[in-house]
Structures are given as C-alpha cells and as structure tokens.
Image 1 (cartoon, rainbow, N blue to C red):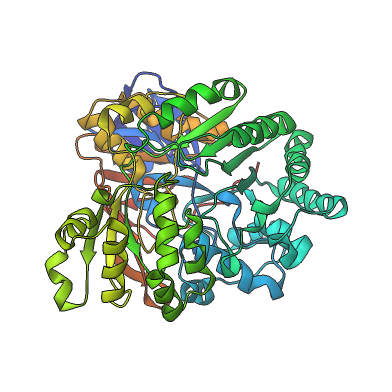
Image 2: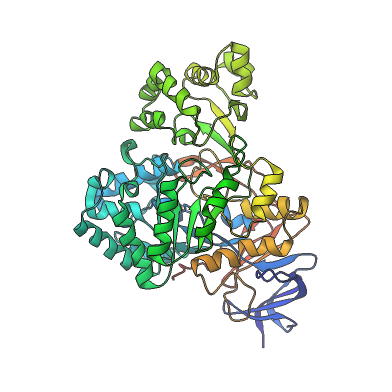
Length: 557
C-alpha cells in the first residue's frame, strides 16, 4: 500500500501521557493508518530524526470569530503547531446576528476584545444570520486549521431581546426563545456555550455585555440545553477579581455544573504577587466543584501587555474606567483622565485591585512628545517618585502630556516561577487562555504551546515532555468532546505537529505587524522549533512558512 505521507524516525509522543517511543506514522486520505512499526512507499516522506512527533495542538480559548473571515490560516496560532482552535469564548461573538444589529456586534468586539472597529468593518463578510449559517460560512472558506465553536450567549440574547438584552433579564418567553436557538446551535455541532460575569466585559456604548444581564433562571435554562443534548461543555469568564472566587461565583459554578451535567471551565487562574495566595485559596475553595467537573483555566505565560490609552482594556475591570469606554473620542477620554473625581475613585479602587495594583509593573514603553523621551523605559513608580507624585497622577499626567498617544507595557501575572511550577503541575488546570484573535493591539498570548514546551518543559523541567504534550492535545480534546483528534492513533484524523525539542519555544512578548484589513496594527508571536504541522493529512506549515494548504474543517460535536 502506498501512503500519502510517511513520517519516519520520530520520537512519538502520542498525547496520552505515555512514554515516548521511536517509530513511524503513515497517513492516507487525511487519516492515521499506522503508528510505530510501519513502513512502505509514500508520496511524501518526512524524516523526523531528532524531532518529536505529536498530535496537533488544540487551543481551547480563542477569539478568532471575526478573523476567520479574512485569515483562513488563523495566524499566529498556525505557526505554533496548533491544528484546531475553539472560538466563541467569554460570551461574545458574531452569530446569530440580524443585519440591523451588526454595528452592535462589532462594537462588542471592539470593547471586549480590543479589535479595532475599522478592521472589523472592512474584514467581516456577514454571509450569515443564524449560528448554523455562521458555521457553514466558516466551512465554505476552506480554512487551514480546524475550527470548533462555542455558542456565545451575548448574540443569542441580543437576537431575541434587541438592545434590552444589555439592560435586563429575559422574560420566560424570551428565555425559551434563546434556549431554542442554543439548542439549534448544539444540533449544528457547537461544542457548548460560553458567558461572562466580568466587569471589564463592556459592549456597545460601554454598556454591560448582554450575557452579563442574564438571570440565574436564564442560565439554568441554557445549561439545561447541554443536559438535554448530552454533549458539550461550558466556558465562563467568572472571577471578577482575577484568581479570586467569590461566594456568588462559586454558587454560579455549582449551578452550571448541576444544571448542565457537563464540564465547566472558568477563568482566570493567574498567579498574582499582589494577592499571593489567591490561586491556592480558590483551588481549595473550588475543590468540591472540581471533583464534579469544574476546570480552572490558566496560561503558562508570564502576562505582559501593551497599554494603549485610547483602548485601555487593561483597566476596564475598574468601575471608574467605564466612562472611558462610553465615549471613545479623544476629547472625551482626555476629559475623563483629567478629572479629579475620576482619579480619586480610581485610587480608592486600587486599594482592592480587581486585576492590577502595582505601578512597579507598568513601564512607559513609547512616547511621541520629545520632552517626555527621558522617561521611556522607566516604570510609572520610578517616574512618580522622581516627580513627587503618586502613581495615578504620574500615569495620567504623562498620558495627557503626550496627547493620549503614548504606550505603556504592563507585566501583570504569572511572574513567580515556584508558583507557576505548582500551577502547571496541577492536572485540574486546563491550559489555554491564549486569546488568539483578541486584544491584538496590546498582546499576543497565542504562542503559549511553544512557550510551554520550550520554557516549562525543556528549560525549567517543570513538566515532562509527555505531560506537556498531553496538556496541549488529549486534555482539551477530551474536555470539549473532540473525539477524532488529539491522539496519535490509527483511525483518527491526521492532525500532527513535528517539533525540535532542543529549539521549540517562543517569547512572552509579541512583535508588531500591520497586516490587518486596512493595514491595522496587531501584535503577533513568532515561533521557534516547529518543523511541520499537518492538518487532516495536508502539510499546512513547514520550514517556518505556511504552505497555503486549506485542509481544515469545521469540527462538529
């Protein structure tokens, strides 16, 4: 038998956590037909000597909902050995959507995911209305990677309730209508539903994202959809104070588990040095729920982001900053930044920081006013001491002095090596939160798979190679019920990543590109050591370049 592809002489890490073994892999018609002691003629032979051959990586937390309209290669995830992405997270998305509601849907993404409006307006194709039509449209584009979808609650509520979805709970009749649409999405192959409770998730005109207004009775009804369908999972952005699980959030998680009968992943479990025991305390508190299928989600990256003061998402969790998002004209934002009452409220909120509370971790990265160049590369804390001000005044005075053009960098979470080793070795943690496609103006965390394997597996020895690969493959596949990939196993889809274990890696800080529709800026993360990625039997990435293959598909539950 002649194979389409024969991968030879590799160190096979099958994704299950089992020990690596030397062998070959044969592929025919997009499927794995042999693993281990298999040989023969092939149209394409790949010599994987000195390389690891693993299942393709599955990214469980992305926001490529819009980007797939103009970038079927789903970059930069496709540079990092990722072969499947799950999108529709955090309750925000683009379907279902009536034509008259498109502006609202786009502005939700502008505010929640920091994607520029001009990019969305030029790039979104809008060749759908219903959620099943959205999935079908994605399939027609012949993507390079596999696309899996969660049904995000916000557009479903808005489709039924209109703008009142951002103001109130649904009536029983409306709830039934929303539930019916979610059932339709699950029947079309969605892998679950998503929502958020986070303060920073502000949508159109700075109003709460529609799913934040859902009542407990609503959420019970929507969770029941998964129980009735007996499939899927729930993703929820839950901890309003990063890594701190409040009692009401515990109750929500408890209810979602009970009413859905399905696993629930919640974010964000980031290590905080300003609240040193937050993650440990939350894990102890959530232990009974974790036993029932709750999965806290984290990222293996130390989180560093750029802060653009025209779109300051990093501060959106603070109630005082809501005004900044209500009117995003430069004049209106400058007036807020200059307002003494705004500054005083922000100071009070910093006494119990929801997501940030240390000016030593905020650095002035770039300014345009020549008189301010002396401060570039210095932390806000250093500048404040030099100027005899507190951090709030120094931060905002610099912003105004540079006409809101400056950029800061903020190193926020996951900076303590010993605690990260502890977190990563907790098998209850779902690794993800790459946020691919979102926050493109300030960060790129979608390179986390190569960072995990380079930094935490090879350099730190925090995880074995086999465990690192398992966390990127079978673990997310099993969580969402993606049954035909995530393992090197005969009969499964030929989604395969080949990497050099001696060089695999990436940075924790992206680089700027201006390749969005209309020349818009985004941060991307290049990869190192990914030799080849195969999607459904087609070589998609090799020798540091995309091949142009479009063998991806829409995965359906």
